[in-house]
Length: 229
Image: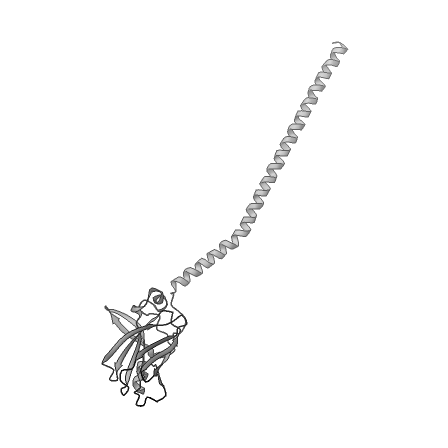
């Protein structure tokens, strides 16, 4: 083979190898770039998963604990923990009788008042009034005869209350078992069902002189009223 032909052959080989090397270099660079991109994307994905894990784990634990606590408290009952109290006075005016008092009963609690003769048996009149948002109450009625004594019998019947009040007192007054005054509670029956209620009585004194100062009597539980009057 002639020298010129060998030179041409070597030039061809060199050119071919150079092209091959350049191709491999470009291919490796391109794939190295893709590999780096995939590695970076994978790293970002893993970091995101770790962040989600570290953030969500405490939240899930907190939710699980609180859900368990809520469920436990729901099973233990929803009765109120406060002691119920109700107190008041009967004010004797020459022409009117006023009941005025305070309580921690819910707003809108219905109280029934019966105007009874002194013998405690003869019913004269029957009426209702309600507590306001502070739990206070006031009721006014006409005096019948000034020279006679009467009894005002104030009662709280759970079955006569609104749904909102029943949520606090209980549908049958089952939450009305804690009082600051022990003897103001009483039991009654409606349609074969037992209920717990509140009962307080006050005396309407007779007035012999129209110039007499306004007198007052405390509302009190049945046993205390009977023993003191």
